[in-house]
Image (cartoon, rainbow over all chains, first blue to last red; front, top):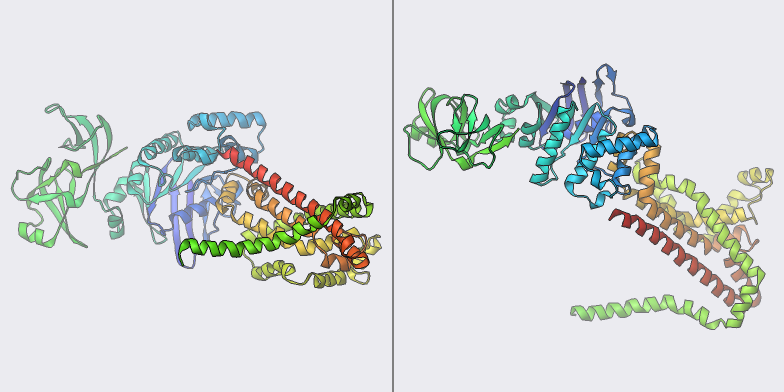
Length: 352
Length: 265
């Protein structure tokens, strides 16, 4: 277990305030925040690159707060990866092993093992400069894993990659985590967070303002910041299955409501994201081009910065963003029954 | 003025400066007859002096790099009180008159000084000794090494050192295995500059040690005692040797850098 107690750090322009966290072995923690939120600083404090003004870091009962960087059991993968340009991939991987005074045979065995695990056996004799983004990322991960870290610290590991490679590395990270590797991952991308994290911490201006299970944090933001940060309330857990009636692939909610959306996938589990402003309300069923029309009861109308958030129970909670004119034109209030429509193309599916 | 007109004017002005550099050097060789040159090559006093100059400058460069490289690293990496003062101090030998530098050094190492007494108690006398020559050469040439090495270290991303330490390297190993090899090219180029500058030093050396005679002093001595005609062949030979060394070292440095780069592809 990793215990972070009241970590604070003052810089001139920005402070990290009393961060406390407990992380169990094997968890995948994502710290989500804007640039300047302090998430990367927290990571560097854990790695020992920055000394905190106060607070303590424990791994089980071992106090790491004053331990030098080189003996900390936390392996960091830097945002720019920090591969050594004058060393081959093999020598990069050997670097941490040599620091541990292993024998040549042990080092060579460990390198084969790591390069097989990260699927980089074909590039071990090349220099980092010539590698693709995905390959570099794998090398950086392999090199850090060579230290057998109690916790892997990842600083924006996916931000520099294109969509295809991002998917690939995500699956590498998931596999690592499933094999028991504890991971703390820092990002500004909520989709990345929700698709990887077991728990999410939200950081804002040097404070950890919310910490909990991934979906709970994003669905029940404690501050308007989180809501505006993710911009999205409608995370609907779904399973992809073929509809026996019309033979099309649909997303089925937990209580078996089918939602139409465009996909090439045939099966899977994940989240459907429905942008709030893509949900239209009407009192009567209407003939529209929207592929989804649900019927439900309004449970709440919440003032929002640009209008009102209307919360409906349509078998699950569905949020819609309306202007105040929209509210008065429909003359709706809590308890009214309404139809909610949204286009299939407005939905985004995040695979788990 | 149109663009090509400007290029012409600049080319002519730049060409004049180039000519100014080339003409005297070419003149030295053109005015030295092959016979004079041949005699000079066989003159033991001259060849001995050239060898002495090369060896002292080389050893001085190697010896002083032991301290100059760490200093360059500190200047590139750490911020400390008085850093800009240290920075200016390092540049000082370049801007002060070298005869003044020689006088200052003489005060430090002469037989009455503390250092001079300490050295003479173990039988070393800096004045009139190759060690003194080395000190004078180092004093005026070390800024070239420090600045170049400092630039080299500055170009190594700090992240790489942090990463090395995160991977378990001590700060010494992170320096030795990451920063030093990555700054190698600048360091070697700085050492070549320091070596070349050391070879050519006259003002500071002549005050500390007229004998044994390094070549710049020998050229001066021949000029003073026998005149231009006798000094010129020595100057020509020494120039040639310096040029050969400079070009050879540059080529070597570039070759090793290219090997390094080729490995990256």
